Image (cartoon, rainbow, N blue to C red; front, top):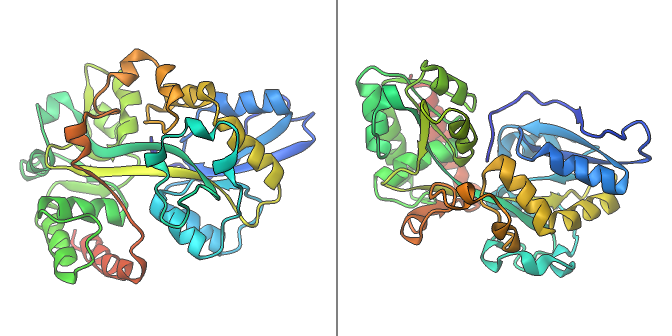
Length: 340
């Protein structure tokens, strides 16, 4: 899942930290990796793993471009993988030639700048939909129902992510989430502004509010299934019937990495089906590791919001790098944020 936004912290996830002679530093989305995976890596290799967190691709990129050093591995979405490659921020790993890479479903080698996985390893994928409070929201089916809650005076939240949020407007207007025509982008922003009644915040921290009933429904990631499993009578998660976005993150070695050899060891470690499956058990994401799919719990594999049927998958669209056209989105995002 793409997780609740957390303040950036450094966590030492190693029972052998005091003895470890080598280190590895990950920079990842919130809690977007199972700590048990890191502990298993340390136990096997003696390499101490530290984890810092970010809440968006843009936050991560800005920090790296501002000169942040010390990080070895980052987990950009596919379009950010392309951007970071073009900026010269990634190091070649030849992970696509590593033993075990045959476990990766080729359709997940998506980055246009890395067609042979010479740089990054496909890590996890999922969709972005709606988590809702059953009592407050009722039996909602999609975005139209979601915004209707706001019109009824109930509280809803949107992600603090310009492409995800403008993407809803593009979907509802029948356009691609990668549209670059100014009228389509402004029309998408108009859709959000016209339906902004009831939107109390643009945030990543909405799931606790949905559970408590402070918010009726929230724009959020498929990883909400973790919380649905813990609160099955209170909340649920859906892929909106009108369509939604598909996301995928890749595991990439930074060109400035201080511990590139340890980073490559970790990437190869993650190619193992049992390790990818261990991550899925806690994250409830899709995994590109084909043998791992046979090892995950049945209730996850059978959950159609995590592994959607083909007709639903065809309604999901992944973001592409828009280059200079992203400026159009930035301008409309400012208009949305100042319209409340």
